[in-house]
Length: 280
Ligand code: PAF
Figure 1 (spheres, helix red, strand yellow):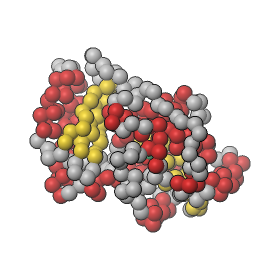
Figure 2 (cartoon, helix red, strand yellow; figure 1 turned 90 degrees about the vertical axis):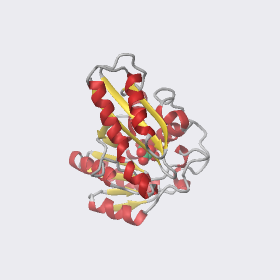
Figure 3 (cartoon, helix red, strand yellow; figure 1 turned 120 degrees about the vertical axis):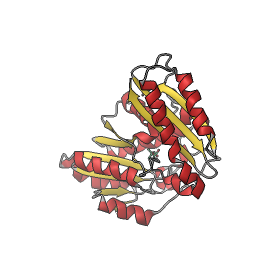
Figure 4 (cartoon, protein in one colour; figure 1 turned 180 degrees about the vertical axis):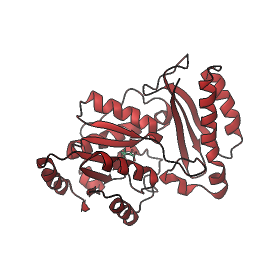
């Protein structure tokens, strides 16, 4: 595995790959890799001749009161995981390398953003599409891999790829879970013992919501009311619980087609998100 830290080194490596007409799978991450990322890498390895992994904690997608400085980082462990996953090229740029000066052009996501996580994290998805635009231009992958745990992010990236005509296949990979159902996340390390014990109930609630929706006997509001009762028993605070069409993320009167039920839950030091996407 080759490790590069500058754009120039990255392009030099990729020049050879492109000359050989190899397909390139790209897995963009912010590091602190876990099984969720590993499943993206496994899929990328299966489907491509050459796999690029990027690790970059992107300051542009963190709000002023968010956890940019506290975001967990472990380059040594990440490098080991990348090696074990047979990554071909690992790109770990510094913030100065990616943003040597303030951006003179700003990207602004205007759809699929004022719901779920986008509602409270103003500018977050603008930061996500900005960094991905840079990385897509640099790496020019054949396929790019994203986890469905961040379902809103996937919906917005679908918009980015389509609207800006990136010749890239978007590949989505299901959420990887702990044995008790809790979605894997870099932020799970911040849960205390009690929070960690009850956190799997978030997914249980979503499963119940899915069953209710599939029974076709309940409206979105009735399903949300039922799940609220379940989540009321937990020790943290519900941030949102919402039902939309997917990937459009629009309110649906009649539950039909592809639907997402998504939850965000705030514990003392960690905000957890999870969702279920299914077809009625
Ligand atoms: O999902 C993430 O880790 C980040 O939002 C991404 C896609 C790597 C962009 O910084």
